Image 1: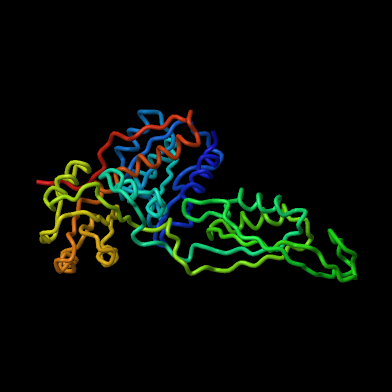
Image 2: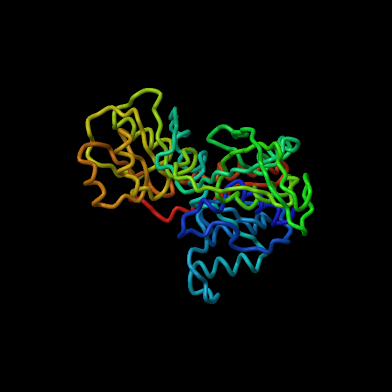
Length: 364
């Protein structure tokens, strides 16, 4: 299989448009026409991981954390990033990363954490905005089903767990083509009225080009009339973090023991106990301290994340238990998400987990 076929699928399944502005997800190293035969999934790309891939004859590394965050001006081996890049290129190993775009997915990193600790009624903690468009177009009755199906197949019409969503109403459209036109119905130079259907649906911003292309190709008119509106409503299926309910309330110390066990978190930091039972849990994989206020506003008893700063612990004011279980620990299950996505599309493709522990933090 060519690398571009593989990355095209991942770019679609984990849309690059979802990543944060500072991020660098997507293909890091590799030529699109390169043949790939097996992949190794890791949290971080390190020198040991590259060596492991070489020994296992894997010519594609798929990581959660991008290898390249900043621009590379030279390749002399003076930094660990330069050394890793050099070894990967020298051994024809491609590198692909899915970082904050994987965090954003409704079944992404935080959702996987919620599943691991058995949360029910899981929803997004901080829904993403400015990700939706509304498409309005006008279709002759004879071609309505054809155009509607084409739009849905291109990805329009998805609202949460529902797809094929749209609204249609009949009306009469009018137009007059000039001498250069070749109208599908009516005659050039004459006003024509046609029974049409006004059709409305929604789409994610990153699908705009694909959906409009499908509309134009399926629509019979020379000039396709359509409107696109930016929607301000939050997308409840996309965003950072999760909120869910434990099957049974737990004392705070029992909850910490649960986190210790599930995430193998040997260095848990937490704020002053509130004395409440833990039922509603907010969480965010990786560095989620910026969502502390959102977690408090949901009424959660606990906010589980990583990289909480000293002064952040003062923000709780006994309203919530803050739990820092470690960056590596809260994101390590991202590998399972990536593997499931790959196997779903390419069931016969060889894929394995890296056995290298890339956590740079040790505990005394």
